[in-house]
Image (cartoon, rainbow, N blue to C red):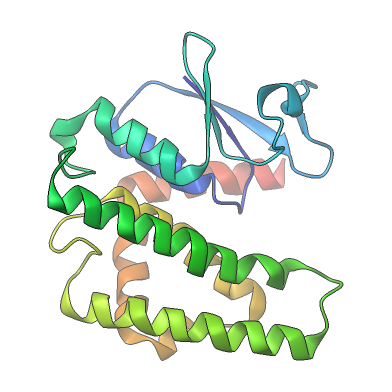
Length: 204
């Protein structure tokens, strides 16, 4: 498998999951501005949407959208427990969290990256985002992970998008349970390894 990724993007989530599962894979870095890979390839030929992450399977098929990719990966090695069993109630809960993270947290951060967006508009968007973080805070105050006592692909996704808070002077310490979650996930070997690779890629 090949994971097309770019540092500091949501592709960190499937990168973490691949390392958690110990699956063989190749990383292919993408320049998000030019849509070219580091070896000069046309990323749009891989994913016409133009966004990372994209997972290319050994048979050439390509899967996009992080929430779909991490579930696909988890099901390749169900014994690892990164996603509840298919057709179970807990699996529906996982999908509920993945959709919430995608539509409310990920999408809440995304417009803040725009240099064209006026500060008053960003303030409104931050207020909305903070209300959504309140929902996450309440969940993590009760449990170490989104699905209870065990790390799942939803935690990898949440950790990934919450790392963007530092770009906008959003101090996650104002939400103690979230801050504890970020420290806990950040200590995982898979996360440290993925972040080390991203750091090296940015420096290259």
